[in-house]
Length: 391
Image 1 (cartoon, rainbow, N blue to C red):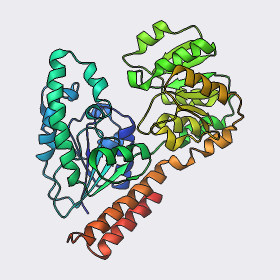
Image 2 (image 1 turned 60 degrees about the vertical axis):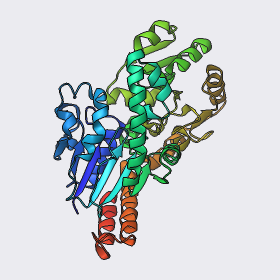
Image 3 (image 1 turned 90 degrees about the vertical axis):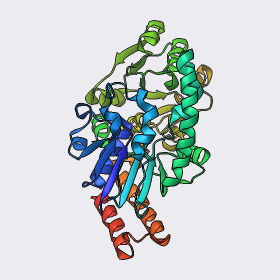
Image 4 (image 1 turned 90 degrees about the horizontal axis):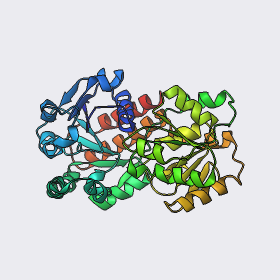
């Protein structure tokens, strides 16, 4: 079975690339297709596979400014020749699912989210642009939405990273999506918790410092509370937030993995005020035994159990966040109990669940009359993938 994995772009290592790594472990002979590829910015595992760029990657400045070439990406995807592949897996957050697979191939889309800047975040993104760019983007976004919705018909099975995104897939594409949560490297954070460090680090925020993460809510809440808060992460809002922060709020900037694990292991609780599609950070914190105080919308509802592994607050306001912190301080949540809540989000669980979804998609394709991998071949392929996922 020849497999192609289509990932939107490879210019760094974030949550989407962590998913790609697990897909490579599940399908080690897969070829990778992407719009823009910067080998220096991705992991050795990704670099170990053949990676093919669309023509977008050959345009001047594409590695640094790939977002500017969004208008060319639909055509670039459709020009890829995937004729020889039996299985196509698209990793969708930017344009990826719009490829044209062979009619007999099975196309499974792992959807991190329909393109946010075209749908949920469109008004906020458009508001950041000047008058000329705003007019151009409005025209482009309208055309891209038409293409994006149309190409949903090219996918045999959608798999979403959370129930929140499954609902977004249903709303945008009119398609049902199964839910397979993305993989989290639990062992790294469990090891830090096992060291038995004192919970003397106060409260913690771990986030990219951009507007929709709403770190400003946490800074203002702790200004009023006067309690210690540590913010780990960087981004375009870093200087503005730091300039307005009180003395009890400190900014560390970006931290490495070892320092991050220790921050989780020492924190009283993680504060997570943004609305995320899934949100790997709360799961990392829980794996280290650190409770989570999160806004009760988006992916946090899939991961944080109110009253058991943390607190969900109902409104994205300073007052609601303060009420959530005060409620948390009346609780006694044991680190072991919190860590248990993260146990179902590991990499092996992701591989097994995703392999099952692929096997189901192939079986459905067989029932629809596709001649490729019929009968016992389709069953054997699914069983082999599941067995490999469990190893």
